[in-house]
Image (cartoon, rainbow, N blue to C red):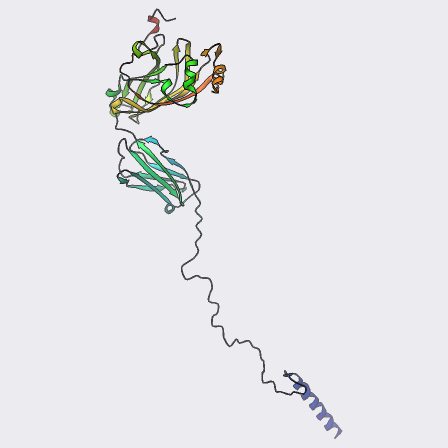
Length: 364
């Protein structure tokens, strides 16, 4: 019997221990509520959260937020703004960084509307070229725009006039009055000319020959230059004691555009020889050669023998605010000239391309 009661006591104690493991609703002393809230807390989320976070950010609305990393800009165009070109010119644009062809637009137009053509992009993606389907019109103005990645540059250019026959040019004489020229550099050259005893001086340009028949050879032009001064009745007359200076035979493939030089000419004047180094003359013949439009003359003028009031060369020019630069021999007695003008042919001027000063007894 003692053993029976011992076992029974142990069993009862074990039952009490198991009952203590239940969660009780501690709402009051002695409350033995069976805790129907089993609170298994499996967190099955009766809302089962069927929205299994389908927002995987696939953005099925099509807005994939593509980043446009095209940041190229137009850094140059050709033809340059306000330049003159042949009728078979193409339009090009250069970019600061590679671009795709869909990011590039080149439009060319004249007064009649857009010009038809084809645009290509080089393999690197930094140069685009627009090639018109047909040659452009002669002596016409065209506007064009080039854009890449939204960066736009606009410009315009003029085409050359129709080619001129060499026979229409040969023997024509053009005289550029230095005092009436538009001096790009130095700006004060007009005021300096009288001090250099070059007031009223003219650069005379004579067309000795013009080859414009491609079947006979290269397209070339020969110019002869000299200095002239107003004579009787204001007629420009070649300085009689100077041998005319012949330019090197020049390329005339851009007919009617001429690019003569560079040449080294010595213009003999009453004050002595005046060398001009790296002399270059460009312009466009128009109206069958009756005028050179936008003629440009530039080069180095050696002024070491020119002076006034005891001041010579750069000692004189610095007083006019005109700096000197080294001549080809290293002596700093040259000034850079850049003059522009429209120059009609001068049928009244007197010029002898074969002048020989040795036959003139009045020459030194």
